[in-house]
Length: 458
Image 1 (tube, rainbow, N blue to C red):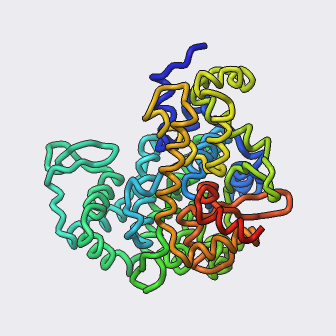
Image 2: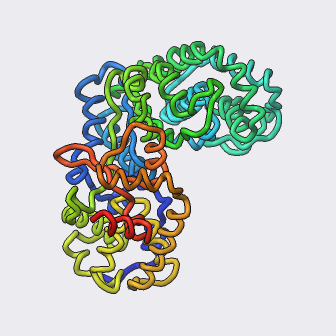
């Protein structure tokens, strides 16, 4: 089989998130559960379908940005739909600026996405109380609802057009689109909505979720599941009005508000929170006493530094599947030299990324930006050097001392300094039969700074 470059190139784009509802995208999917030591999708799914099918649940899901969480959540969405649930999956960044948000922003985004999904599924809502509330917001913000606006999922319309009556999702979007694009409007919106958080929750539950659940179950569905992705991008260095780190304020201080909806909820959250002093309050206020489920890196080596053969093999298949999605694993291996000059080059690509799937795809994409396959070792090494130097430039001396400590102890302490190492992808988390362990991003092993330290400490 010849390599189809027009199909291969876009499949390697690191910004591409696999949509597991697409038969084409499913061909690219590799299940890493056997080497990650935890079947995260099965755990999330069983909690909803087996343990609490008729009671609301709230589950927390985390991991390094770019480690494959969105793809796994897409798989969860498909499996829950197959199990009979109505599932609303969305990325909160479609509605919000995660670097500047408050709890009511998230609640409005959920109301927007859920009502839009229900409307498309012919669920009949009559949210008169919610629409009255939104009208008050528009008046307070002095939003000209007669002006032309581009409403997500609807298109460009004018509220004054004859026969046009905005539905609930469009009414919400009129406000959230304005707020996302203006810090002043966001501030005024919060001043009005924050004292009415419980009112917003009541309207969401009574006029959207409860009404929808009744109709969904009457139509044979088992219930409603809402999956909110990309909240793991909420930064820790930003501060909220409470003068606390934004991630801690949203998920801990306001965590009880996030879990108050009468449906199954899955939230992504920043990995750094579970290594901070906020871990236990987080479990109790938002996680119903349960720890967040963590998606670790795909292991490329064992704790003793030897190769993790199964992990490496699966990463190789992830790359090869982008080139030959219609072939079986063994058939793909026979065509390695259609993509790389030899198998060692593919091994080098997989190993140097440390099992971070987006970084791996990013380096592969960098290679094919420079030349058509087969990719040469020299081109790969050039891409590796650029990525290494970019990472190196961001590390100061204090952080190097922390990194060397991670190498010696293979663990991360619960300090904000160590959280920064995780957030910046200087350190990766892995899991095995013993438990959780940590190691440096393998790109740092390529630096002279690390090599000198290792010589001095052997």
